[in-house]
Image (cartoon, rainbow, N blue to C red; front, top):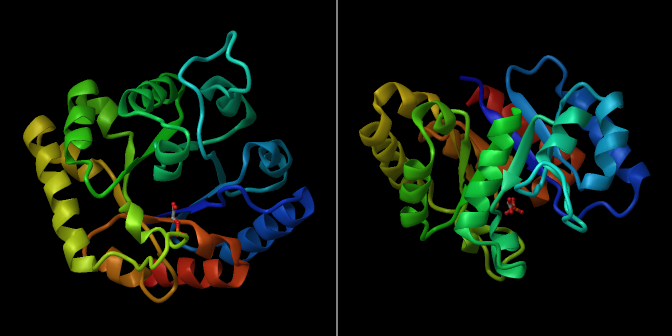
Length: 239
Ligand code: PGA
């Protein structure tokens, strides 16, 4: 399986020219690399970036219904119809700032799968129960389409004093998740279900997380610097 590198731009940059320039330079530099790259810009830039680029474009959230009276929301169907491939769900910043619950995240993941979008579900440092609940709520076929991002909240670079998780400790969490997958759905499903790491990933440490068995990374701050992100992606290819 090729490493999956997902760029979470969060609420950046503040204008569409910068968004376009960043996406274009990343795309050009990454041409031909043997990895999968998904850029997740803010919603407003998606319609501009999608037709002009040939990298995967994802969103940073969506609603759990496909259409209807939900002021301010964006549906999975809208994203799918634009051409998006992935949607990040349950990021700790949304859980904290917007009180998003595990039930909401599950409903959103279901709505994404229903329309053919790949949910990238963020699982924090104390989310063992939540992961177990996810395993109960989905069948083997659905679960293997979800990408799980193990992302301890304290490791996110914008948190005070943040530093990346120790790769060896992260490995034990990831292996625990794989074991839970295997006991719920069998070894084959566990192998097929991607688990990636997020939290202060950069060009220096990406190799370590891939070496311990993560199948990719969710990258925040480092994805906003085109040179750094390209260097990170190149390291991922070699890991
Ligand atoms: P970071 O963010 O890479 O800046 O730590 C990761 C994330 O929040 O998804």
